[in-house]
Length: 127
Image (cartoon, rainbow, N blue to C red; front, side, top):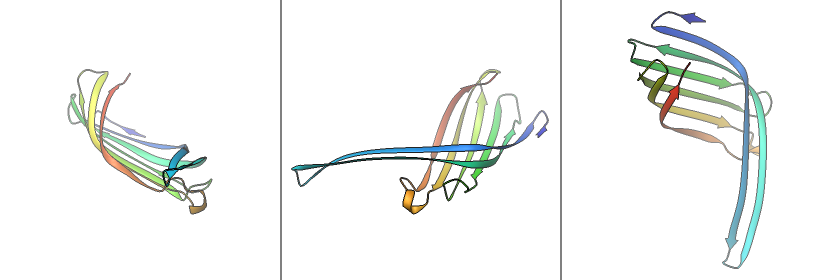
């Protein structure tokens, strides 16, 4: 979408597939096992953006966001990632950042509703 030597901005559109499977085995009162299993999948359209800022050849910053549009099963999702990168070579790099991911499923289908967030360490290759 936009690119110069220090700044790149991309837009994205696509589909996101979610799948959750849960198996449960529990002992009730020390004498009786209770078992259950459930799985479910959803597909939602996604819109997002990716921003890269490279102030030098070795260091850079990345920002990423996407939003799931609640059409085919979820009540919406989003994620944000912010990270600092260090390029060891032209193809090998590492990044340290933070990610938050939110997913809301209708109550009658819910296996998981909530937010996942925390620090990320990424080691990668690019060509």
